Image 1: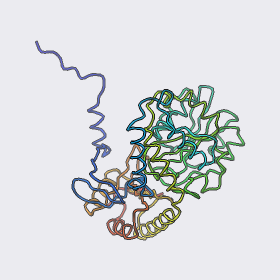
Image 2 (image 1 turned 90 degrees about the vertical axis):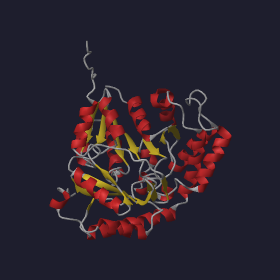
Image 3 (image 1 turned 45 degrees about the vertical axis):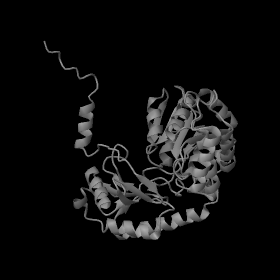
Image 4 (image 1 turned 180 degrees about the vertical axis):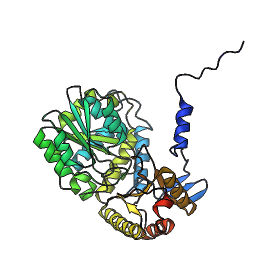
Length: 398
């Protein structure tokens, strides 16, 4: 007698097939080499315009040397969670360096920005609270907000009037981003700080993409906009973008950090980042603070690209950061344009729903200090003049 086929409770194949049909199926591409604004895939070299290594530090010899010295001193891994024996002198020194650099009382290290964001929301917000989020906040924030016992209210992107209408006094937390990862524009932090202060609510910034790139000494979006660090209660930033390493942190008052040490489960129950990694990040911060010329070079590259792309008829999001989204519209059209660029030796990633709203598929072009003006010109030449909307599959203007 033949046993019936048991498929199980999860329709994995159907979900994958649906994504494939909608041109939304994701696949990984193994990279052979990525350095200096270049990438090697499948034995072929490309101009890399997809990375978040904005200052070109991921391959910096001083950071690699600090990593190696840290391994020699502390070993390859932390060996335990931070409340057991995983918290080293290197971690403590990095926290102190970050607090001094960013103007906050204290800092706590996390393995990545995703866990840092989720740890903060889960530790702070109960059913008696409210959470207000920009609709374009990162998936880590949106996901955790939807799972919490508190009520989450989302306001239109950077719409301060809409946020003001939603706010209730002394009820919870407002969260927005310094630089939005898929659009490259900035949150209006003077207005956000004013609304938080007037309503008696706390305010949190996710500055993963602003840290190192914006402001004096690369201190981030708040410094660039002239907003006092103390007016924002919770600061989150990462080490895997402009700083060129990996990991993340949450900064704020000493009381906040002490609270998270006790109640942030993502921190308490995770093996800590390697101490050697903390050594590398400390060296990176030293380089970032002195990288004013690199930041000025990025500003020039951004201006050159925007002027050239707009002259060729392409639609860009209003961004003055290294993230330069080129709006295409339909997912299939974005994939086709990305493939055309790869045929011409330029590697740019197509970003599609659900990462971005339906109808706003785009090429997420990211510039870095390792690029030169000739690289920008090569990208513009590869793009060529923008075809008509019909040829692109329905372009979305913004």
